[in-house]
Image (cartoon, rainbow, N blue to C red; front, side, top):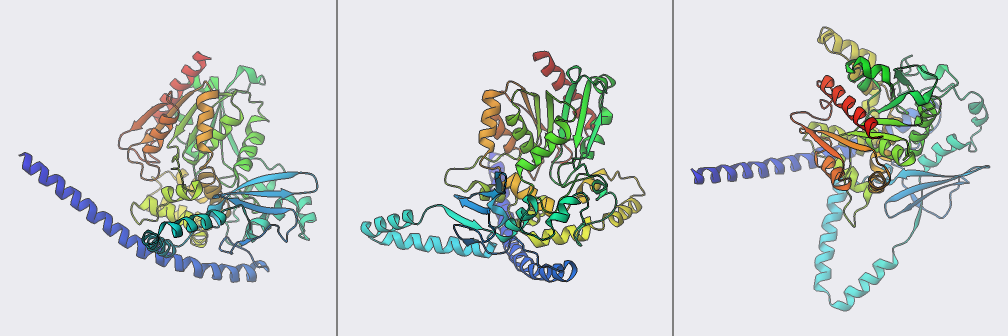
Amino acid sequence: MVLGMGMGRKVRFAMLLIGRAINDSVSFVVFTILDLVDLFLCLLYRVADFFIEAEWKSCYCSSSSSSSSSSNSGKILVSEHGESKIVSLSSTKLRLEEISDTLYRRPSLLTEVSKLTINELKRLKLDANNNNNNNNNVINNNNNKGTTFMVNSTIVEMLQGKIGGNNNHNHNHNLNSHVRIPRWSDCDCKFCTCWTSSTKETLYVKSEGPKSDLAEENENVLFIHGFISSSAFWTETVFPNLSNEAKTKYRLFAIDLLGFGRSPKPSDSLYTLREHLDMIERSVLEPNKVKSFHIVAHSLGCILALALAVKHPGSVKSLTLLAPPYFPVPKGEHATQYVMRRVAPRRVWPLIGFGASLACWYEHISRTICLVICKNHRLVEFLVKLITRNRLRTFLLEGFFCHTHNAAWHTLHNIICGTAAKLDAYLTVVRDRLSCDVHVFHGEDDELIPVECSHNVKAKIPRAHIKVINKKDHITIVVGRQKAFASELEQIWRNSSTKT
């Protein structure tokens, strides 16, 4: 009996190794081909942009050159040790834009394999040399390290539009800032561009609850959705399932993040952490006089929730995080590049990881996906309703479709990857300076953000309550169990109010 169990384990282990080897081999071939496809699409889009929009459009494939200054005055991208910031100088202020180096540093799979092979050969060669040669190599390597100033044309061009560069059309653009013409590859339907009809550019906010003018009498809850989603992730699931008591006690605010859903999707935005936080404050906290609030966030929204909590430490009453993408960075690793490889491992299986890899590694392939799906979302939604005989609720599809490639691309890199080095500090502040309860939910079968991420949060914040939901994944942690989750949220809010 024992012998049979031992043989079974060996067979399963062998099958696991074989499956992993097959996945690695197929992935290498597939992603090497995708590297070439993305290069071809780069050339294709440059030509298309020129003929359709009458100007050449830069992309992040453009090589970055080392320099101490930029030909575009007042805009310098400073890159050091894997972290990048943009120093933007205007006539009135100096701003520091935080940009992830993963936007323009994404080596091809073939290049990485070649680099690993060369490094291994160098290591073997160094082992054969004498100690003096080793010391000289170490000294030379150390002397080569230092601060580099990288100028990326795409980032500089986008900054010109944001802070008023030398473009001739800027004056007219500022006078008519609410009139933005979508790019030819973006959808121009009324749903996707509804925000352009108003000069007041704030986020789309779906709010429910008491309408009292006295903010002190209300308890507030801010809901932040994840990547390529919208406020409907909450309003179609949690909102209808809250009790009548909760609906009369709490003011509920579900937002469409900048670049998603019905919110503005400015083509000149870099979708940095600061921009996302500023828009949340301008759209929810300030106009509604929100002084204290609970936060409920999913996936990418957890990063914004932590940053918001750190910025307003005395205002947060409870913090509920669903599938937080927290990957502690090992020493010696570049934080942004490490997280990009964890979130998007360039593997064909699981499928959700394959999709994340397409979105993260390939600028032009992901733009093509947006062109095919997002620009034609009305047709896709019609076909889905027709095939399912209108039995499938399409709010998840609407959230997935209503974004631009520019918004998705920059948000993915500048928030998920770009904040990798900051999350430790954010969690430390939550642990040491905030007294609010922290609750973390995670689906046991989540193949996009592994359960270990939530356990990492628990290790960083010992008082955090972790709940792993059996047989649920990244989406079904809410969708499909909305009644139970709504009840859990109410209990969290009641307990937090009792403590305060």
